[in-house]
Image (cartoon, rainbow, N blue to C red; front, side, top):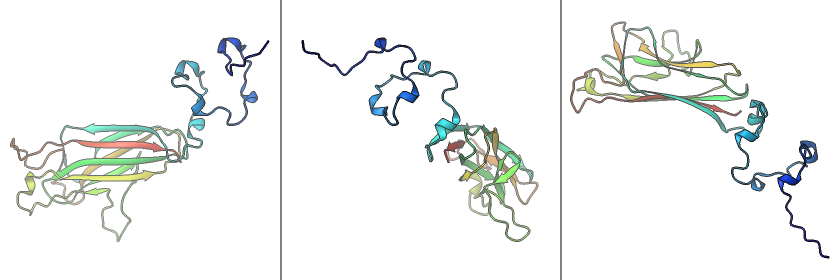
Length: 215
């Protein structure tokens, strides 16, 4: 009598716990051998997938993203820098990098408004210290109140930075705005200085995004 081998063993024919990780040779199971939707969250035991197992071998991959969009306006008077954005993220590994990107509409009723970036209470993403009086910032407002009709223009600025926080504790990143020269100058987010209700006056949207990148 001929014996036919079907090359297929049904899961019902395999005893519980008969196949262990020690019995599977390295690289025996590849993604091409796993059918679509075969592995569901219900089939993964609690705590089986840890941060260290995700990060290992994933250098350069984006592990998580947090983002916030601001569509309202904000007016900030003077030289005290005030929060515009505040975002928290908890890295999966100490080797991870955090990529920050902020696209923001920043205007003012005078010159010298700016943005500063902070990791918790530490200022980051700024120019080198040159001399003793220059203000170290992430973004400088493009406002020039000597330019014709500049008060009706909403200026967009952006800044990006790759940070190395070296922690798995929660971090809060902040974008703060203020003026570096005049305590009477008003800085504006998502609107120009002249805010009349006309089609040539724009209302804007600003976004702050954090991406954890495996190191």
